[in-house]
Amino acid sequence: MLDLPPLARFGGLVATGLLDVTSDPAALDSAGFWAVAADFEGSLVCARFADVRTEPVPAPVPGQWQGPTPGDWTSSLDHAAYTAGVRRIRAHIAAGEVYQANLCRVLSAPLAPDADIDALTALLARGNPAPYAGTIRLPRHGVEIATASPELFLRRTGPVIESGPIKGTGRTEADLLDKDHAENVMIVDLVRNDLGRVCATGTVTVPDLCVVEKHPGLVHLVSTVRGELPADTGWPELLAAAFPPGSVTGAPKTSALTIIEALETAPRGPYCGGIGWVDADRATAQLAVGIRTFWTDRAEGVLRFGTGAGITWGSDPEREWQETELKAARLLAVASGQYGDAYESGRTL
Ligand SMILES: C=C(O[C@@H]1C=C(C(=O)O)C=C[C@H]1O)C(=O)O
Image (cartoon, rainbow, N blue to C red; front, top):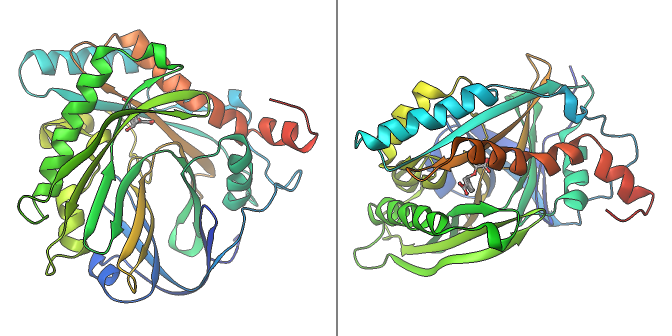
């Protein structure tokens, strides 16, 4: 078995020296620095590390990451199944069961047995820089994740909690339609409701609504929802109220989850879950929504990657499929090593 040492990396922060691992969210209110990986389906891995330091993401070592070529990937839902799913969601909307549901597919490709997921993070840091990029590498606990997430699930600064839901995606700003703004506002309402279940009454606000953010190869609409946790409320209550993230489920959340369960054929795993760190000593934290994320399935010998889109009444099935392609294209190119090679040889991209 490949036995790479446990490691967590979040931007310029690196954690080594694994102390303990638990699935109990109450541990996040105890002490120490925790890396957190929550699967969309609800399983939680919290890993406490002894040594945390700032250190730049290492430059990619040529040949260290042997990734699949873009043609090696297969999709849990192909074009026909995905577009049929979009039509099915529109029928659920027409029937009044849901306003919006996020339809996702999981891509899989063969993975070299000696592949180190942190070498992929090194490539992603150059080829697709992202505000919540990182690695969680815990091979003995079945967690090997490289994320280039642009989306904030939960930031904690003492009692203050912030979430940064994204809804609205285009190649350029001109692609963003009224529909994208409407989708974003729907999800902001949902996240306000989620945080409102645990935050002190009257503290939930929306400091930013539908701000355009530019990310590699695409633009997003991003909002910020903020609230304050009362002193007796901790991580178990916060996660129970807010998980899974509203932007990757839909509204109302429970109906959207039922529809997702019926239409999607592969577990999302870390994709669309929560990935990041909690510093219990300082009561600070930063968890990303696990989108633009790769993870390993060692039992199957595959690397996986998820991509999806929010479906509303105004959705065109072909356009939504294209959106999932757009979100995947650059990241799959980076994972194939193409961007890394170009970087190493000094070519411009
Ligand atoms: C599910 C994904 O994206 C989600 C849906 C978005 C949208 O519909 O615009 C944007 C960001 C994510 O919250 C993904 O990127 O895989």
